Length: 207
Ligand SMILES: O=P(O)(O)OC[C@H]1O[C@H](OP(=O)(O)OP(=O)(O)O)[C@H](O)[C@@H]1O
Ligand SMILES: O=c1cc[nH]c(=O)[nH]1
Ligand SMILES: [Mg+2]
Image (cartoon, rainbow, N blue to C red):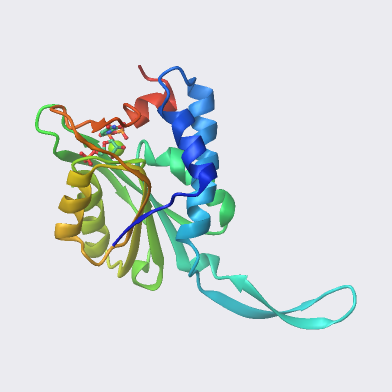
């Protein structure tokens, strides 16, 4: 269940993010902007509730998003770049954090933090991480969420590798994946090609 969000604005902003000369400030701003656009698609089926409001002219039944039923889960640290934008769409959403880094030798994820809201089984959990490379980090994060009770989960990334999509779907076929691009392949260091480099380093200016 892979959806490539090919809106022209998404593709334009992703091209700017990929360019090696894009500054840290611009990269961060673009990540936020692109996340707003991705979120618009990903949250298309958000549950609504009906409330009674007063317009200046009369009383009416109107709908509103059930913010409490929505939980964004950021895979640290690069997920923070997506979280900022998507949170602009639903500021009342709950937020969870899963700290994972990829061991540079084995490329396997190492967990260092896990804090998520209670009653995950009642919420739509939208996991955000810009890169789906081997897919192991996202798969490990979703496994932890399911162990914590999550039942309805979506994964949002900016760039996915075919290998990562296959590995993720092999473990979590029930979790739809949304991406702005499906790139060519992984290289020998498990970096996505052509990709955009190291998303965390580019977001935070750590290299
Ligand atoms: O699909 P995978 O092969 O597991 O790789 C993807 C992971 O790698 C990056 O994080 P990284 O380990 O660089 O940590 P960071 O976010 O702290 O920079 C990225 O943000 C993903 O979490
Ligand atoms: O290409 C890649 C692969 C993993 N993590 C990144 O930030 N970039
Ligand atoms: Mg990471």
